[in-house]
Length: 60
Image (cartoon, rainbow, N blue to C red; front, side):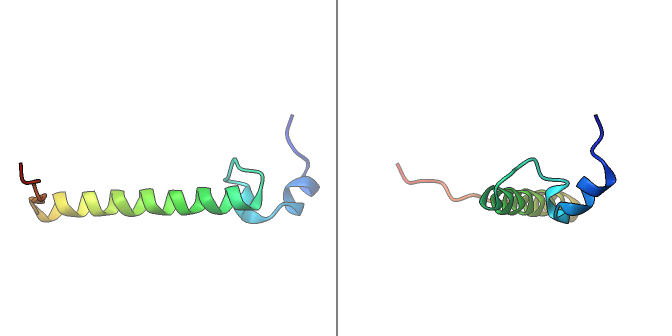
C-alpha cells in the first residue's frame, strides 16, 4: 500500500531515505553513511593515484 501524498509531505525530507524512526537513530544513520562514503572516496582515490599505503607494523 502506497502512502498518500499528504502523508509523504508531512514527513521531514531526511526521513524518506532513512529506515530509522527516532531522531537520534536518523542522525546516527546519516553520520554512518557519511563515514562510509568518505572511506569509499579515500580508497578510490588511493587506487586512482597509484598510492601504495604503508601501514605501521607492531614490534614483536
